[in-house]
Every structure is written in structure tokens, then in C-alpha cells.
Length: 459
Image (cartoon, rainbow, N blue to C red; front, side, top):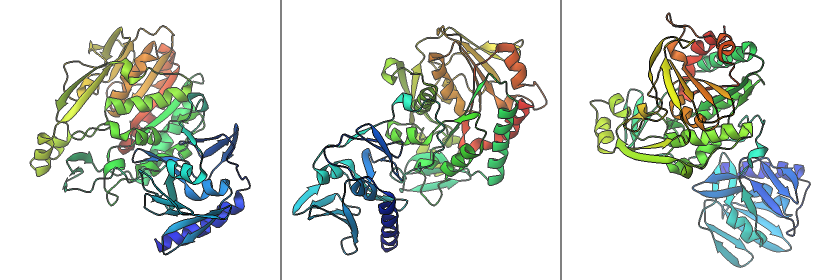
């Protein structure tokens, strides 16, 4: 805490120097949790740190918000509290506490203050208590994301969901507090090769194609203890900040964090759920300026299953825990769907089998497009003529069915199934064949090793 206090005082001086606007309580104040902006009477003022969600509560940076409202700030080492003075009234915001004081009036919030990455945050209701007025906090509007490159500058995963119970490790698998996950780490060399592969796609892909990069963090990024967490967020940031401006990066951290309690990852399987994929598909559509139906608008089914972690931990107590604590497989069925088929070649001459976007009777991750097929083609009931090409590994399987709600034709290619001595696939040749509009490259953050497969498709 002493180290934090020293950093806080230095930061406080910097923020005070840079903050030239002081707000009155009569102002209409709006905050957006996924961008560092406070909006006052329709005028935007940029903050150094964005509002965040933590333990289902909305949090604001203490120093910046109080300085904006004209408080003089200091630090009380004995109380471990920010001292805020305005109009001769002394207020205290205590670190890691639900308590705040304004003069002699005490307030107890339902959520405690937190210190994350050396930034002191307070819950929004605590700020409202200090100000004596309401502060409106809301999400980004869809049109504010259209065409915006989100480089995740102010995004980091919090520790609120990290597990600390009994842990059992076997090779790259882990079972922690009955939650299975894979602990896979990506080297700088693999990351650099992946960046080069995406940039090659940007350089050689057809000019009329819109290109999107979607790198999905795995469960370990949010649930693994800090000492073994893979820090995939920093890897994703590095990729997004290094790829060609022609490629639109899609924020996968913020949407997942804000809905993490809803079951976005399986506990017995190394994949994400279809619900998790929905929130990232929704983010993708918002960047495009399009809407997707609400989750409750889809027909759903649920069943129990035990996933891949049980096999990865085979013969260990981890396998026993996985089999004794089965997952819930939640499936959402597209509202409009006509036909689907699997082909073994790029020109769709070698037909393999019919494909459903979501299999009703399947009781595993294979429920989504039947698993890792070479090329799956769907025609939907959406009559807009738009065509989407998805290059993916297995994380793309749960993502792909959502596209049937916005595209007439969806082509899904597993990059690991081509250019390995058998059938070939080339992005330009395929464009000349079907004239796709959008290209999405999606994979988990632990699968950047597919870079060579991606690069070969661009040559």
C-alpha cells in the first residue's frame, strides 16, 4: 500500500496539472465504460483511465473524477484513503473498503473500492454520494464503434474471476476449483510470425475485401491464478497495434469481461461457448454498423456434457473432477437457415456431406458446424447478397453460426486443412470464384501458431 500511495501522489500531480476542466453539479454527466471519456452537456472530455466493470459493479478512477468536479485531493497514509476537499467539506474514500465519508456523513456502498494496476477505483454510487447528484453510466452506442480501430490501449483483465481453490496440473491442462482450462503460452517469435502472416494477407488480398482480425482469449486469461495466467491480453494488444491499417481489429477483451458471469467458457472443455462467441460477433457487427438479434430471440436447447479437459487430464484426479462436474452445453439456432454442406476443395467440386450450423443431437463442441471440416458453406434466408469468408481454427466453430443472421452466404475454411501437401486454398483465387465481401480471421490467443497456414493462403 505504501508503494501505491507514492505512485498515487505522483499520478495525482500529473492529473491535476493536465486537468483544466472543472465541472459543476448542474452539468449533465455521462460516462462510457469502454472508452476513457466523460461527456458533459454533449461535450467530451478524455480521461486517462476508462470506467470499468468489476464484480458486476461500475467503477470510476477516483482521482480524475473528483478533480474534474473541483475537489482538492490528498492521501492519508494512516487511513489508506484519498482525502477530498471541496467547499470546506472534507471527504474520505478509503482503499479496499465499502465506506466513504463526506464531512460527518458516512456512506456504505454495496461494492468496495479497488486498486487495479495501481489505479484507485471507486464504485459509481460512491461518487454519486460525494457529489450529491446522479451520474449516468452507459455502454458505447453501436454507431460510436462503426469503423473505429480499437487497439485495447486502456484494456486489461481484472482479477475478480481468478480462481484460488484446489489446483491440479497435468502437462498443459489445469483443473482449478473444479474449473478446467489449458495453460498454453505464446512466444514472441510466434506472435511476430502471426503479425507477418496477417500483414501478408492485407498486402495481397483483393482490394474490395474488408478484413477483420479476431483473436479470442482463452479461459486461462480470466480464471487462472496470476502466477500461471498467460497474459494473452498483451499478446492481442501487440498484434492489433502491429497489423496493417487495412485490417480492422475487433475488441475481444471488453465484451467478454463484461459478460463473464454468464458462462462464456466451458469448465470441462478448452473452447468457449456459443454464448461467448455471440458477444464477440455482436462486437464485430457493431464495428460494421449492423445489428444482431438479442439472445432471447433465438430458439435454444441445453444439455450436460463433459469436454476435452477430461481427456487432457486422463488418468489424473483432474479427469475425475471433470467427469463429476459436467458442463452445460447451450445451443442457439439461427433464425434463418437454408442449406449447408462440407467440401474438401476450394472450388466445391468434392462434396463431403451435409452440414448443420448447430446440431440438435450433438452433445459436445462438435455441435457447432460439425467440428473442424475443411470448408463449410452455408446459404441463409438473409436476402442481402452479402458474403462472408471465415478463416479459422476451432474457436471459429462457435462463432460461425451467428453469421447466418447477417449474411446470405457464409464460407468457413479451417486453415489447417489446406496447403499441407493436399488440397490448396488461395484467397485471391477464391475471391475470383465467389466474390466474398468480408474476410474474418478468427482464432484463440493460444493458436497463433497457425500463422504459416494463414500466410500460405495469401501467396
